[in-house]
Image (tube, rainbow, N blue to C red):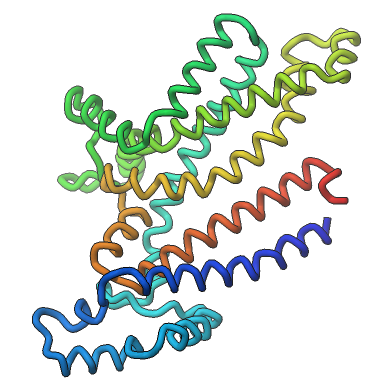
Length: 319
């Protein structure tokens, strides 16, 4: 197991280096000059040249990259052009909101997907299986941006059951338990919008893995020993089927981060998604680069943890 951990960690080093290099290159090759944003309105050519020299923007791209890599090795990712603060200080201020949204959506999708998948596998070939498969297919097919707007129109604007967006209410300041309830109300719609796609995907993979597990010999032996259907499903078949489900959940964490960009923009959620969106339109290159690197790092770490969890669950992977 120690060898597996060490090998996975060593593989992430060149991958992270590639992420930094590619991200830096693509962003700096994109249209737009950050010197104009730094210099303000109607700058003179002399002042523009001074700004470029001060921030190293007049250097060749290769030189800028080497300078950036040297600073990144010291965990210095520059200063946000718009916020005038260190890039990762701005990013970390938004991380809790995105983690809250993403983890709640992942938990809902995981629990709901496993329950639907197990139920469909138990009743495979019946109308229940067909209905649950259709529901999961619909959830997997609905675009996140369309679903989010639909939820706002129905539950926020028409029925007025839930707030349209934001993290908390702006007109009333809550404290204690009331604050938690207020945040939970604002979470409902974005979590559903973000989780439905993953729920359908996890349900379909779980159903397939459960059907395969139920056809194994150890299930036949369990029934022969007098085990009831519930025990066979949850104690024998599901632990083996979860190997596939855990892999899907871990790999889909990156999809949730990408989906959070759209979801947070629709619901005005103050997380990394809205920060990334604002950085694009403000041509805040240091912040945009930092957002890319942070998101890529989060995906790499999630995949690493998934590999390690899979190795812990399946001893064959350790060989």
